[in-house]
Structure formats: C-alpha cells, structure tokens
Length: 90
Length: 213
Image (cartoon, rainbow over all chains, first blue to last red; front, side, top):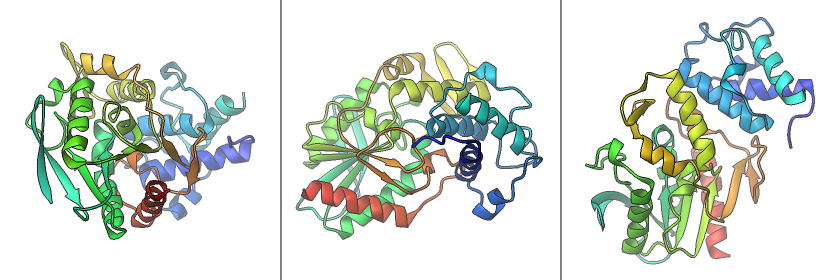
C-alpha cells in the first residue's frame, strides 16, 4: 500500500531516516519541521543520502531525478518531507 | 565450516552450515556494498536454518569477499557460472537470494528460488550511479563505487538483468508486490552493518515451510 496522504508521507520519511541511518525510534520521533539534517546528523553522509533517496523511491513508488535534488532538499526534516510530498502526492 | 568449490574460472571459498544430509539451500548475497551490509544477517539466517535441520552454503563469487580475482575483473556471467557450479558441487536444490543476489542464480539447476526484496539490474545500476556521484567518480574502464572498483562491462551486463521467477518476500514498508510481506529492517541500507536475529528467524521459518511444502 502506497502512502496516500501528507501525514503518511511524513511518517514514511521518518521511517526511512530511522532505517537507513540506523538511529533509534525515539530519536527519529523527535524530528520536527525545523530539525536540521544534512550537516547536523553525523550518520547522514553523502553515501547515506543516496540510500535515503533510493529508499524513498521504493517506499513512495516515486522516481527522483538527480536534478530534483539540491543542497536544500535535505537541509531540514521539513524540507525533505515537503520534497517527498510534492513527489508522492503531486 | 569453510570449504571450497571449483568452477570454470578457478576455485573459490564457501561457508557451509548445518547437517550434511538432507535439504541444502545456496545463498546469494547482493552485489557490491550491500553484500557487506547483509553478510552477517545472511549467516544468521543460515544458522537458524541449521537449527531446523536445513543445510546451507554461502559461496564467494569471483571478485568478491575473499576471492583472489580482482573486483574489476568480475563479470555477471562469471558470477552466474560460479554460483551454478557451487550449487552442483554441494547438491543445493534451493536458492535464497537477498536483493540483487536474485540476479545471480539464473544458471543454477534448482528446484526453487526464494528472494528477499529482490532488486533488478536497472534498479541496482540507478543506485550505483547515485553512489558514484556521491563518491569519487570514474577512471578509464572502471568506476569506483563506494570503495568497489567496478568494470563498465559488468554494469552493462547488470543493467538489463532481471530476477528469475521465485517466491518473493518483501518488507512491509516496500510498495512493490510480493508473495509475503513482513515487518523488518532494510539492513542492506544501513551505513554500518547491523543484524536482526529475530527477523532472521522469521525468514528461516518461511524458507523451511516453503522447502517443506
């Protein structure tokens, strides 16, 4: 079943970050709109970014072109969820 | 127990667990970095199978793990031939493949195939392209992807490859179709290798029931 609403997409993004980065459910649950990601989470290096994007594709049934992603896409949890929502929900 | 098997291109090591008599499954790890991330987990599944009386083998493919072949000399044809030879040598009749390991069992003579979150060649190559851009980049005919030197020829072989027909198990979080969906972590994504013995036991039960059925 594909996530079909904004709250589901947010929880999918949260679960992807938890699973790819191997961080605790408590830590992932504490992510808010303004929580900084890239540059702030030591686990989120450039390789992990590739894993996050690919796992988002699998779970949301979307395709992410490299041109779609820029330095701001993973700046905060809110930026990443807005990006995922735009892709998944159109 | 570490053993060896011979194939047309040489000799490779393999890990063998469980009883000598009875059913034997042969395990295919994913290609490249995901192999490192899933090896411990795969061996945990093998130990769980052994507890249930099912033997298993995990062959090194040419150019991977302890193989003497250089990684950049590896080919998909070589992996498939070596995997088929290992299955023949050990009497393995069932394959258990994780992710892109599902691309490797094509030539083995098997009674059945079981796949966890199988990934086709197109998906694998798209992911490798993304990793390559995240990393250092290319040289002449080989590219370096997350520390693996990979030949362009191997990527050309992998790109159109698709998994054989199999019993497909996927994670509940995965949107793609499957015969069975289970709650579990995508260990192949973890930056640091991790394990989940509870999930391994669940998978081993499904594999044992599938072989028995």
